Length: 409
Image 1 (cartoon, rainbow, N blue to C red):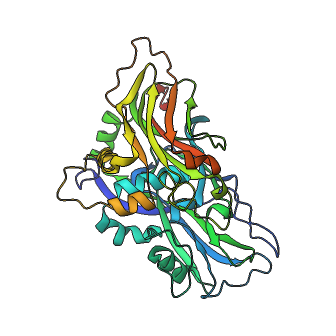
Image 2 (image 1 turned 180 degrees about the horizontal axis):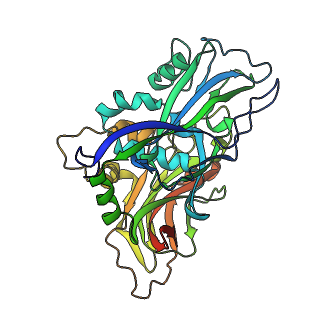
């Protein structure tokens, strides 16, 4: 309502600068990618944070001397612009409102489910979103992985890749942003043995600044600048230790409440922090890479109850896919295409989704254990694997008025 003409004089996109400028690596060095901070301290200015975004320019180059990566090299950046952000922390008046570690995989899963197929083929390209088409990880002219090939074309030969990261893909945002950029092994696939790196050349925060009319200021003061509270979903990625057991239980969290969504997938241990592996291709139904080792059954225990009541079964994958698609209530939506079909779900993105929105929390709000109960086939005991659980839990933010200011408590 407050964005409509009677209340709004104009919208002006403005740039917020890093508190400390980026530094660039010398020969043989790696760029420092931690402790990047944006701060907005003027409380008299209104920003439309929902439509704000990070602008990131990066260059793919050889680590030894900063030379360009040739177009015929078998190296490329993995996934889209969201893989550039590893950790994100948001604060208001010194209070942490949102904090997420390893957020890149969580946002990747949300993008798989939120983006329509049409959106991913068009608008999402501004976010360097070129979905992998198969598990083949080569980037030469004969590559069958069309997503990886497209990313190679855009980033090879010394080209600067310009991309944006919309803040509305994250669950919550406010005025002080602290972020760590991703380490190179989580962003680069390469099999030619040459040390390479992603060098971020620009990292900017752009936000629409709202200039209200007198009527608009009255509306804002009456409806927004007052004590308030709201709820949002916070993403937390939990990672098991490396294991080989074929029948077990993994304690995801010893205690917690208001869990609403849980996504679970398995991945070979060797895919962690490796230049020669793609960490955005999952291994739930093919743990060893030759289709002999796989997850047989899986379900969660939250408190004293199991979800779903009947285990998810390897032999009924379409049930798992249908429930996963319905995360955004799209199973019966005939007007919106999806990116996941049975073929790429089975081979590339086998994610198990458990919906906990209808779970009744105790009156006293006592925390509950969250466990993953699973069984693998016998062939899996020859392959080291890890279990990942992306948990979305409901959080509440409360703003109280102290004098003429609103303060998060």
